[in-house]
Figure 1 (cartoon, helix red, strand yellow):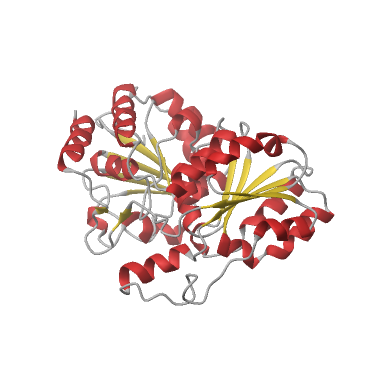
Figure 2 (spheres, rainbow, N blue to C red):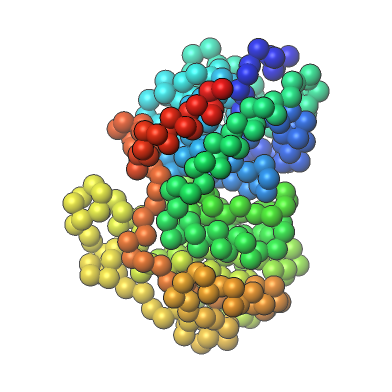
Amino acid sequence: MIFRSTFNKPILLVGNGARSAGADELIYEFCKKTSIPALTTMNGVDLVQDDNHIGFIGTHGNRIANMILNECDLVISVGARLGLRQVGRYTNRFAPKAALIRADIDQYELSRDIKENEQKYQIDAKDFMTMLLREDVPDYSIWMSQCLKAKRLLDSYDKTEGNLAVEKIASLLPPNPVVAVDVGQHQCWCAQSLILKGNRGRIHIGGGYGTMGCGLPYAIGSSISINKAVTFCVTGDGGFQMNIQELETVKRERLPIKIFILNNRVLGKISETQHSNHKGRYAQTTQGSGYSVPDFQKIAEAYGIKAATLDSYQELDKYADWIVDDRPCLFNIMLPEESYLVPKIKWETCKIEPSLSDDVIVQVENILRR
């Protein structure tokens, strides 16, 4: 028996390995049966969507997901490698009140100890979820309602223009879309705020590979693999320039790919590091330090693809018909240059920054500790 009924605040933590094993439907079935909250890694953000969505954990994870992780008393990790960006520098601070059960097919991942006395299962994620579903697991609706209440309390915090732009994009997408995400600030904004309608949508994300420029090729491959159906691509000005020539592939193959460029005219992730850690000494990342951005609308139109430059993501409503038709298009969405990525868990202190007021923190903790 894997699960013990002595736990009061369990969570299911799922990573992309669960998707690779074909366990996605079983995850939803388990969550529906038990009402155990499900959190994800960044690479597994599309595994828990719609009404079940709470967030992903780790360095740039949703604040509520990391706070729930700190309060739970059991973590059932399935297909998640639990790397440094999830567990942090000090593994003893990972889910400090919780027992840990890990299921992974990779013996080398399991060879790393995250916690003392953790239970490890070298097993296919689909087989593991099938075993869990056979067990008599209590209903945790009360604990789930606590997590959702705390999530609603924090919904208005940690939202930059990038998050709001992603939320607007998500609101205009059809149910169960296929979305390809590039690498950069927008990758984290999408992991935090791209909540899809339906439970069968896909978010193809570059994850930790650092594959800047992958967004458009991901979208092209996705569209071709589903009989040239509509797919969506969220990218940044830097990433898009690395494979901009693939617009010719989109036009030539008549692929109905909808491209959203979140354009703040800087190499965001790198410039943030230069801003925070190097006293604002920028190098080849901003308009004044050797980086520049072309007119993406004119470039797309030169390839024969309809395009629009938007001063604000709010203008997307005017183009709702472009998003659902069968032709490719490009939206060059302007964001402020100072579009930062929050929240972030500081490596040195393991604290979530920017910090919230003591009053808000106490409210959330009180909800989760009832």
